[in-house]
Length: 327
Image 1 (cartoon, helix red, strand yellow):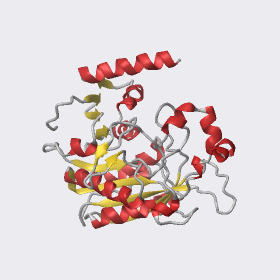
Image 2 (cartoon, rainbow, N blue to C red; image 1 turned 30 degrees about the vertical axis):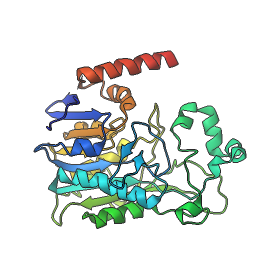
Image 3 (cartoon, helix red, strand yellow; image 1 turned 90 degrees about the vertical axis):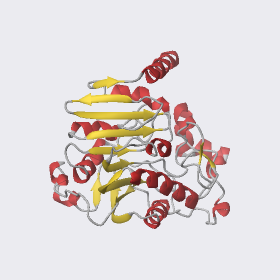
Image 4 (cartoon, rainbow, N blue to C red; image 1 turned 180 degrees about the vertical axis):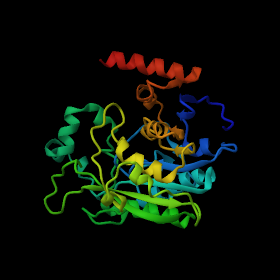
């Protein structure tokens, strides 16, 4: 596939394969691809200031060092997103597409207020679930004035990212609303509750492979073949608190990648995209900076031919030992 000193995890299901790389920056991995070309990218990157996922801090083109999603400025986050998907575009076929799932952020650093933290929904959840406290970007939020916005302002992060990718050469083809009936509640009383996330469809060129009937094959009713989709996210289990549901992944893969093609996710997490890709007869390449998701990924593919390299096997053994100690 590509020349890389770090070995990868191989998954085999029927005639299809999956290749997973953990513990490596997606930009570095993608820069070392050989002749492999992806038909479709399906990805939900870290949202701005929503989570702290961990992993080694990365250096970016603007010399900032840190984790994607924890930038102090939304436009800087958008530029870094464009940087990642510029690398991904180089390994995408000219007739390939990108599905990008993003959420927005309200400007507030009130989570640094101990009193509000004790009484708010977020604070109560942290009290019950310490792993959530470790993952949530609680004490990183900048003051609104440092971002150039007013307190309570909706930042418009998805569209900032869309415009950054558009400026970088992508063709923006669709904005879709992912309506989530089970969205987390909010104690805000002076605005409507948030009940959606944004899905963008980009293409690399004017002429690209797209099968709109794939939505029909995914079992979507007629109204869901439009640009508003209603799917619950469901509960996240384990270390990863923001796993995409397979119900929304399926139509994106069916519409954006032909059978036998290759689906790429540069922010793989526990490889929910990979699970659906293999189920639908596609191949899969997943990359993630955080090696701790490797254990949950093995559990997800327990029914497949899961073949980790020796280095990943040692990592898995270590994660399993830590999991037993926590219990």
